[in-house]
Image (cartoon, rainbow, N blue to C red):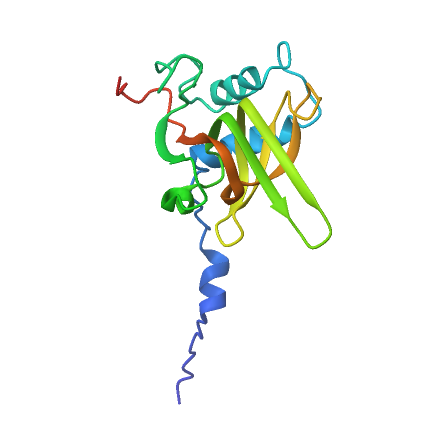
Length: 181
């Protein structure tokens, strides 16, 4: 009587022999990674825009000066605008994601708890979003020239607690993309 051999294949055995394919990091992922590696470092004179420009160039995104300031001179544009925020009711905050760039103009945020009240001001400032929680409205930002520091640091901002001014959120554009302006 002939002996018949059967091979048993399980999903685990098939997956072990199959190379895992992962997607390349997105532009936003690159921006966050480069920014996080820069914590504690100073770029140029330490201005916030110099840091963001360095990150965008390193990530191969369109750099500072690729767009005309908007809506007024000094309101820097960093890519495709995804949100304009001037009140806590702004519905487009849910679109903010890691790697986006925030441009603040005369903005103030107020965070109240049972035991304290904290005000954060950003008169003319640029920062990169490391993370954002749309449920709480809290963003972790990477930026320089903030809170008396000229090196890159991490801070938390309650974006939905804006009480004055405004900010714009931009999504970076690859350096080789066709210009929209």
